[in-house]
Every structure is written in structure tokens, then in C-alpha cells.
Image 1 (cartoon, one colour):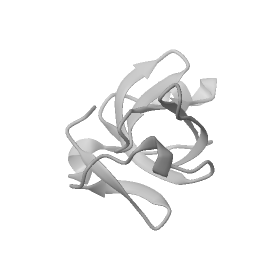
Image 2 (cartoon, rainbow, N blue to C red; image 1 turned 120 degrees about the horizontal axis):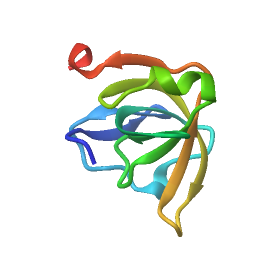
Image 3 (spheres, helix red, strand yellow; image 1 turned 90 degrees about the horizontal axis):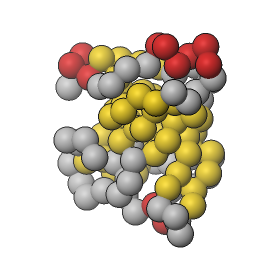
Length: 103
């Protein structure tokens, strides 16, 4: 995962310097913020501070707006599969910031 560790606070996974959040502690419908670590044809892999990066599913018209290193705010946890060690995130209009501007 990326160089940041995150921790879950007040229902939102946010930047912090604690240990990664276990997938069992995430909740469907919860809000997450994170850093894009890889852009894919259907979305992006995002480090939200969990033990595993999440898959952000994006509508076709928003895919060109996201790039590696972007800090994305307001993602919603759509699904969690603890057995397969993965989770999906969604959002309609991502709030993107260059990582250099955030840290």
C-alpha cells in the first residue's frame, strides 16, 4: 500500500499514523478518504488505510478525472468481502486533491 497509514475515526476512515484498519472494522455505507495508488479502466485502487487497498468503481465520465497520487474524499464503502480480502468503494463526484497539496 501507499506510504500512509490511516485509522477509522467517527465513521470515516481518515489519515493518521496508526496501524492499518482490519477489513472487519470497515462497514458498508461508511465513508472513506484515501490516496489513489493505481488507475484502472473501470476505476482505481485506493489506499484508505485498511490492511488492503479498496477498489473505487467510477462512472465512465469520471474516470479521466482521476490519477495516481490524488487524494479522494467522500467515498462510500459499497461492499466488503472479508473472506476474499477485498472491498469496493463508490462515489458520484469525487473530490480530488493533489497529494502534495494535502500533506
